[in-house]
Image (cartoon, rainbow, N blue to C red; front, side, top):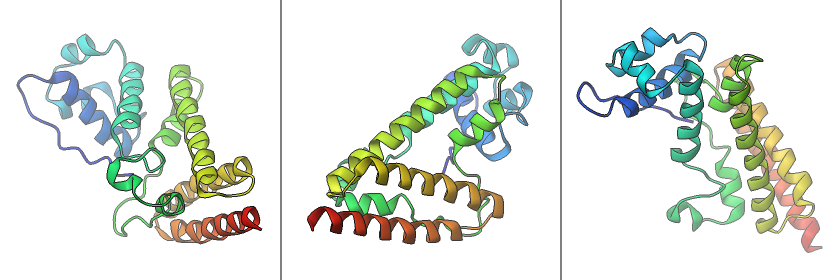
Length: 197
């Protein structure tokens, strides 16, 4: 998932600049590694201004995750162009191999959950809601594709997605996405074949 956002400098829109800085820094450097001073500097605001918009760093993390959830493309609930593709094609599109050469950082929701540990329960609630909605969306998508046992298949695809994201991050290599895509294609085609038999 790309989170490249070029922050604006100075002037109005401090809240949006803080969110944009959080998108960049939290994803690339990590939630815990990014201090409030660094976040304020990247957003071109004072710490005072940051705290006027967000009462705590945790509040910034929460808004960062909400913003990503609302504004990043979603193949499960796609825009009009992506919706023209078949459900099977949309499932496989989830596993397109990211371009090589960039730093693999994985899922921002998973990363935030790991970094939040027990210190930010509100963050865990946002992550859990997102992941549950994601699995539910996969189940609906495989049902639409005509697969047998969509609950099982949707959950299997979710596990493969999470595994590909984690392993590509650990190895800093895109190949896990290729392997996961092949596994998903096999599972989806077999489930569709069973349903039509």
